[in-house]
Picture 1 (cartoon, one colour):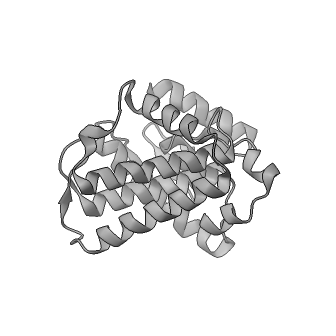
Picture 2 (spheres, one colour):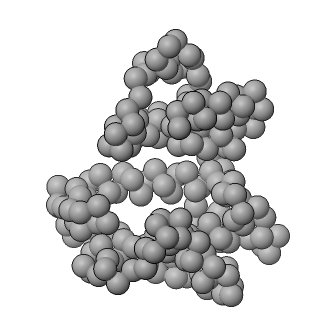
Length: 206
């Protein structure tokens, strides 16, 4: 993602992302704010963050606050904060528990959540995925998406097979379509039929 973002010109920065209402530079601002949150977890200063309006309010303010800066400035902020968080995480045991907005949480799982978020936002801004990495990436993201659903109290009963995923009720999806469903990102799908299928499944799940 970092290499892709560093290669963008003005047109690329201002292009629409798959996050409704956000440009590519807005997604970067969101990522920088995410690292502000990660730093606050490590610093024990979560109470100083403004979560009024819930997570959507936090995200909207974080993006709006950075729109007056150049993409290069926000890229530097993101890189600096990210490096700090990763270095400090690296000094902890993977089995450590860190403060979060939902209380003490295993660092091992927090890292996986961040990995999934970064992968999703990579797709939002069109970061290319090498062909040789695509299948493995799809599988771990689907597996972790299922874990997140379980953790949120919204478990899915599915059967994971080599070429497809079978939902409860015998609905069959390919891996890419299932990922769009479990991450609630039908807009990532280029195939309009599969996109409409996921949109229907999401409406039924709400």
